[in-house]
Picture (tube, one colour):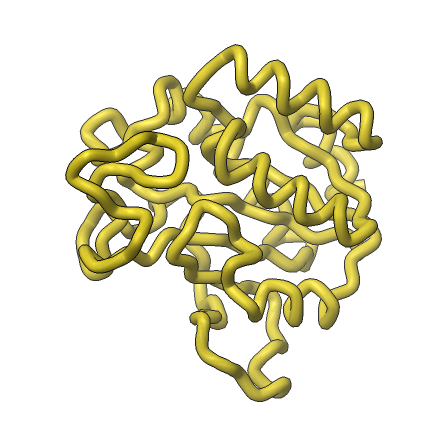
Length: 203
């Protein structure tokens, strides 16, 4: 089974007026929308991660180092925390950091909420991944060199096959993006385009 993994396509990251805008992210919106629509049409599971911050979170700082701490962004209840309309899920199962009964891990759309850039800091991420047990994970979103990298390294550590959609992602630093994608290739990650993924889904 193949699943679509949507990394943090939230207003604060994706749009120029966002609190922690990833440069050029808005240029990828069309490719992202096409991926989500194709997955929906094909009945493919769509997992999305989303920052769900409060001012007391350790990642939020007035003096951020942009490595482990960041400025205010994706604060719970704000417009910036919302997913952009083009990648919005119809009726996702919200997965918080709290323990969940197994019966809740069913459906076609899941929204993994997190307090850190690494989605695996939500203990239910591992549970969901084991429950879905995909043969392949198609990853897109932002930022390539931060949240995408953390997710992909997590998948690889767990022995999962990963495909990364380059034209449906953007990074913060081109040097780090190059380093990340090179390391992924060496680890067996396939880098591809939205058009190729969509062709595979429709086929």
